[in-house]
Length: 248
Ligand code: FPP
Image (cartoon, rainbow, N blue to C red; front, side, top):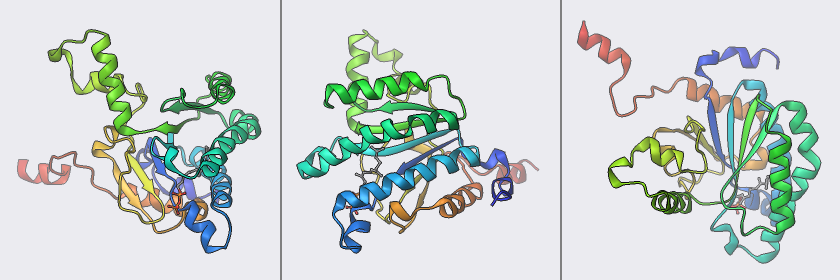
C-alpha cells in the first residue's frame, strides 16, 4: 500500500479533485435498505476518500453533498442529509484537524437551521489554519445559483461591463481563490454535470465510473488518478508534442 502514492509522479497528481458522490440510493435499494442507509454508507466512504486525498497529495477536494435541487427530495431524506452534515462535523472535527484538513463550505447557508449554520461556521473557523488539504463541502450548492449570486454581487459593487473578465467572475464565486478542479469524478455511471461547478469545470478532466459512491474505494480513486496522469490536457490548443514537431 505504502508504495502506491509514489507510483504517480507528484506533478501528475491533480491539485484539485471534485467529486459527485452519486449512487447512495441505488446502493441501498440493491441491499433492500432505506435510502438513508446508503447516505450513511456514503458518509463512511467519504472519510476514507478524505484520508486517501491527503495521502495522495491532492490539495483541494470538493464534494457535492447537497444540491439546490435536493430540497425536492422526500422530507425525511432532506432531514436525514441535514442530520448527516451535523453528525459528520460533531464526530469528525478532531480527525479533520489531526489530518490537517481545512474545512470550507460552498453554497448558501441561509436555508439551513440556524444551529447548523453556526456549527458549520465554527468548524470552518476551527480548521482554518490547516494546510494539508482544503475540503470544500458543497451543501445547498447549485452552479447556476452561484453564477446568479456572483452577477448580483458584481452589480451591487457597481462593476462596469468592461471590467467583467474571466478572472473577476471567478473572484465572485464561492470558490474565489481556489484553483479550478483538474479532475471531476462522478460515481454511479451517470453522464451529467448536474449543476455542479459549471463555471469552474470548463477544462476539468472527467472520470466516470459505474461504481456506486459507497463502494468507490481507495484503489479505484487511485485508478482515477492514474487515468488523469495519462490525459493530454490541451485547453483548446494542440498538444505540446505536436507543437514541437511543427516547430522542428
Ligand atoms: C447522491 O446519491 C448523493 C447525495 C445527494 C448525497 C451525498 C451525501 C453523502 C455521500 C453523505 C455525506 C454528506 C455530507 C453532508 C458530508 P443519490 O441519493 O442521488 O443516489 P441514487 O442516484 O442512487 O438515488
